[in-house]
Length: 258
Length: 255
Image (cartoon, rainbow over all chains, first blue to last red; front, side, top):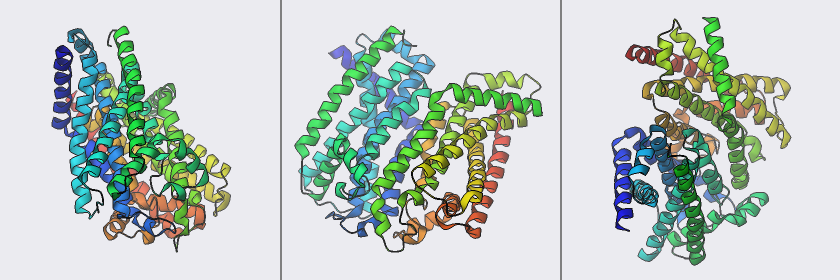
């Protein structure tokens, strides 16, 4: 266990160091969610006037929850790009030779993704509060919202790591981004579920992201709804994608890490 | 020179075709996003003053611009890979002219732009969108769309030449995306409630590219919107080409 953690901490530290000392990696990771927030909360605030739209703490908070979860998922995806870079440069091969327990490598990447998102979450929250976001939930509700986002971050990382370790080339980047992006957007992003077009509503009902999003929004509004189900769904996704990522790691090992 | 451009353009096109992710993504993803945005924001057509009763017709301009961004990033990544793998270094040892390298590389981007424009237009018509400007409008839309892809492509090349890193070019995708999202993509500018956002959208050239395409779909012939759209596309192409030529000169000097 200690050996696994040693590997994990070393890999995690390296990911964080690379991210925070390379502006071309750091800035887009911060800017991406910020601009989504600005574009949706600012550009679409008029949607608040659509007949039937009701959210007690306003459109800014409504969009904040979506962008918070999206940023968490994408911090995982962007970490996947870093994993691919390690394979492309041959670093992963050396890492695999040196690591006594290679699952620690995966854990290290997860630490890197979480650290990366942590900074984004702080900046996003500050920007949202400065923009006048109202928070109806108490401390426990807000903690629950961020805990949910942490789980989404892990899901995003595990998905991206599975792809990165199978393909080991940046050409697979769209495969990391696209499913995450689509699953986020086939959910009630701009308006509540009952205002979506019928076909989208039918898909959103089946999409677990809808559950996460609605639970997150209920937490920020201070009216928790289906929160237990949302956490259960997130944990189930983590279990599923852990298998996906570990099998990806085994495939990378079988390929000699290159 | 022409022969050099054609050789490199052919290589660029073949390389794009050999990487399905590079052409499938720009063909599918913008339409998927158009579908979810149209489904998600369909209720926005009930806002007073909304210019169309079909959000999908209003939003059809979006895939053209987003597809151009995809083509740009993919082409930028290919060029960055040429730098990383030393292909550019080897080219520097040949009599190849720098301009030929750039134009040949952009040839692949234009080919992708042609394919994308035809595809988006076909899907738009298939889902029931009717162009108010008719067949002639479709031709103008096609020309404008390819011009936009070329203009954006020059900036993808610039990013690749400046950074020389595939990962850095990929990471710039969200930055390019910003211009798309801080625009009149989701709502007409006069319906944007937040003042600063409306100002930013008005200053953003992408708004005018979107509005030029959109005008052909939901208005008919809006000379002002079209003039602005074409002027901005040509302007961006000229600026992008000039800056990437300078960067290429520096990059070749370094090697």
